[in-house]
Length: 131
Image (cartoon, rainbow, N blue to C red; front, top):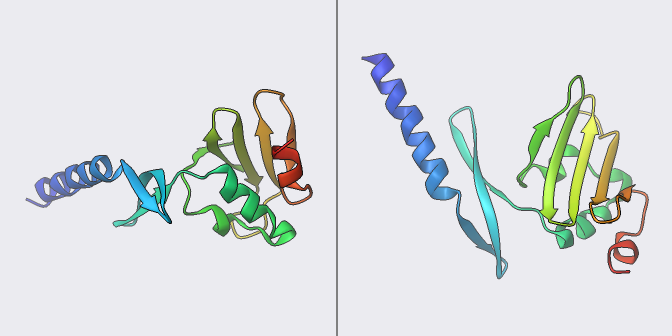
């Protein structure tokens, strides 16, 4: 009986993820969103935008992993935490480090068209992105 209930719970989570995996409107902007399930709790994740990255970059060295938790990412890495945030076809954000409780080693914005990459904590993003 317990195993049967567990299967239903997992199926319900998948359905919730599919239903909630659509779009949300936040501050007048239409954004793609995902649902992330942590310990039975579900939370809506948003697609990060270039404007979000520019706004966050103003925190410079105060940026942490927590600043990016509400955004969709793909996990990668072996021995390090590496998260990839797809922004638009031209831009991706990579955050990497050895411990999620410490500041990231790098937070790099990459331009796939030019191959350029730079740490958003150390550069003026508005100048770089809009030129």
